[in-house]
Length: 442
Image (cartoon, rainbow, N blue to C red; front, top):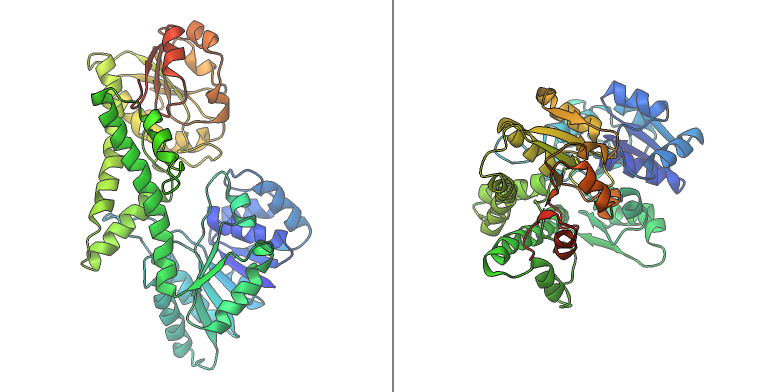
């Protein structure tokens, strides 16, 4: 089948590349000329394991092409996927301006039947608004004879595992208005679900809400555990033991029950706030989610206070090594990263930073551009420890999980670890002579 994907961010590029990988002909469209030029040269603008190889292979074999022209991309395609960004506005609601822009342009160039599929995460009602905009643009052109269908098909991709998630999905949610569109999308996605039919069809509104609800539930579990971890410290309980006890209940399970410095990235913070805004707009306040968002913001401040308290409230002149700048392992995404919250606050308090991340340094350097004199980036994780007063572990990259602790003691000025991911054993750290500060553990 012939497919046009509009937007070449995490969602759009993975979607286009994976469709091409199973034999479809795909155009990927983006208004960013620099990004398209990179992709045409076989370079990808994001770090995602396995993606660059798939892009290069399918581009070289002619199944995956890149253009800045939506008209070119959609002309011979049956499916048009809208996968542009929906960043939060000042009030936390989803900014849909990119979606509306694409819808208008589709209407301006539509000449034959297409299935227009919104894949960006959007509030309930957005897909039908896309349909209305396209119809209005067709009417302005006097082309009401051109048929098209609208659908919503959310992505459930984890950064760092996006290719695997797309190729082997837990489920594929299809929101449609009619059976014709549902059958076309089932045929399109069939090869991803050959062994077990995991395609769920539902109304467009239900599908739009399903995406938000899934992310909001996962964020809720994280915030609940983080709040519980604070309580554990007050009553001499261990949140890791509590997590094990809870997770063994088949009704609960163990996923997303790990305490830490809070969730980040491009999805959870944005989607929780967008759903809160949608609830307020519909006069159906989502009080639990407001608490989830508040707890997540508070968790970072709470951990910062633990660091400050360790030094009697004064970190001026101290140097902190930071391991991990991305919001999670296996990605270079630093959006809403806990590390990028901590670093400016510590610098503001007079500290210096020596930071290392396996892949996210360039993005972090751009975000922290105003702190050049106080932040140094190292090419190797142990290098960051040299002469530092303490280590802040902010992202649980694999190389940080089982480090050489004796070497760490020798490199650090003082054997102090602030573990924002609860990666190490408190008992082992104490036995080795570290001052070990973690979250909710004994």
